[in-house]
Image (cartoon, rainbow, N blue to C red; front, side, top):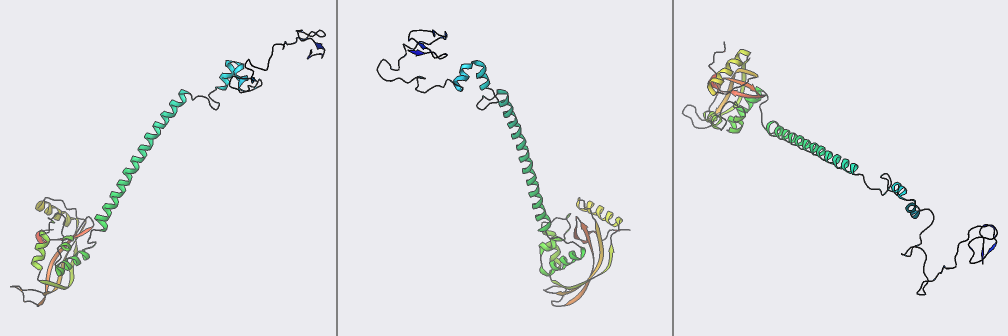
Length: 268
């Protein structure tokens, strides 16, 4: 005996509708909770999981293709990546790599230039002795003679001369027996523009090199010397005064001794 779900009237097991209100009644006479093997069978999916008849994945699947399309929308989590977006990302990454490579290359070149500049300053400015004035050049001249120092003499030898050591050695050889005790500068005269031009032309003719002279001074220097060594001309241990004409010139901010090869040039 069953009851009508609409009016509650009694309905026979084999009746398909309520005799009172006519509501359709489902036939459950063939429903069994047991399988043929005698073991209880779980209702639901073949995998043993109960599938909900309410909202959820089954509802989405039951709704048809439209609901599935909504679920698989590219904007939702788990959706497939659009091909166009993937291509754009790869292209942007390639451009970024090229851009970064250019930046790194520029930085390497800049660092190399800075390193070379520092090396040049250290080796050509800070570590290289220079005569910053004609007075300092004259001091180097005196020290080179007294110490028989070829390297110090080379500091004030002009750049247009051969600096293999022969010029400085020859200069010191002629003055090797003298020790300069003191000196006095007199008759100091600064070069005029005409003096510098004439001397530059003479240097060009003599050596084939260009000497761009910034400044120059001609002077007479009195040296008080003592003879230290045997000489056919001087007595060992004797002291006397030597007066000599000298010129010092400024080339590239270094003062050099202008040797006597050009002292007879007529500057007038």
